[in-house]
Length: 510
Ligand code: SAJ
Image 1 (cartoon, rainbow, N blue to C red):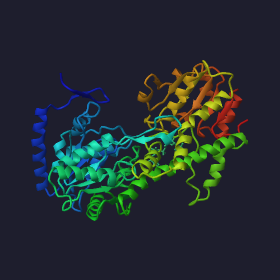
Image 2: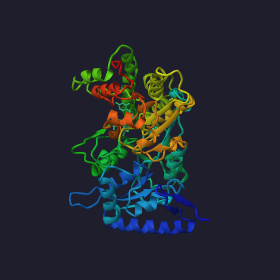
Image 3: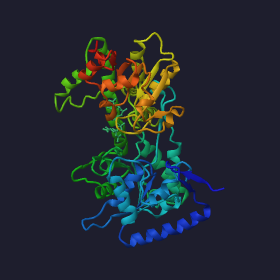
């Protein structure tokens, strides 16, 4: 019975047998020899997720002043049921990620089909053939209990296994460049020691040939500027020794637009790892501050968004004040503060914790409960209340549901036995909330609704006319605005139609 990996479109791909892997090893050796003869350095990208697969194309797309590619790139994806399908899909020149960035399909076609200097494989031995490995394997933080981010931890097992596999195969002079967002201390205290252990097992003198480890975090934003968020974006980097730093700088300089987006070298990898986690913690704390003040504003008749706009007029010092919302989701701001806090205690063995970071994550994670409070104030009970939730992705105009605040909202409303229907124009399936059918037609969720929650700021919702919504509902629903999606004129129209309107941070609505 063949071992199958199934792509999102349902296509089934057979995972290679040992016999096919042996053939693949021959192919890899042959390709690598040919590419070296063309004067190209050989790079492997470990992990072909939403970061690695596009990073691999950016590296393959890099050319010298005569237009010759610097590198041949082997993209490596473990032969798992969940992800092996990416290997044959990429090798057909198709991106394994959906994207609104027109450059994504273009750069895959150019590097895989036209130049043929990017190829995917699931064969581990590829790492013995390369000069540089870019590590883009996933590393998650786990928060075991809701609203208690202080108990969050990082399970390094899979990451350690990935690094150990590198140690078993790479040549001693191969640079390992970690791009994955990792807890501060990981390169020095996890990656380097594992590589040293494996080098020693292989009889390599680690004094003469110390492992070469660098860190430069990615700032990938898989939206309309997916490729540019890798190639045309500032980078921070460092290494465990001078040679690692020099090789990393040379590689990034060849691959990225460092003229317009200069590199920043930090003293050591702890600093570079701290920078990424602090960057996203800064953003999470910024949002948490506005969420806390939104509650205050609601109680004293203030529209926090007008206050925010007034403050942001101070360009250069206060114009980065963010906004309150249903809550904070996504893969970055929910995780990075927890990684740093965990590292402080576990990797560095320090007392205490990053209080503001952890408190901010707790404010952000539990913020959807405030929207429930807003609704509950208007009804005797939530039991059997028909609630239409508009938006389940974590961010406006994208279909990504990872760590979506709408999940918390829907789960807690259903715990109160409310009758919740969900809609999102970008989301067909909601893997994190399997039993939840996500509708793509408003007519499937609005009829009979007693509450309409504008949860996510998709453009489609912002263009909805109050009269349309009320007509589709056939009721005069409570309208709940989670993040300033409705301006005062629209609010007045809803009120004229007999609807009550409430909103996060909108204390001025009477
Ligand atoms: N959010 C708010 N208020 C805001 C901004 C965002 O509640 O003022 C919420 C969003 O609704 C979402 C969550 O926070 O649920 C995260 O939004 P985000 O805009 O930070 O988007 P992310 O999570 O994709 O963050 C990423 C980060 N990029 C990387 O880590 C490489 C972050 O550093 C970027 O600043 C952000 O993208 C960006 O600017 O797009």
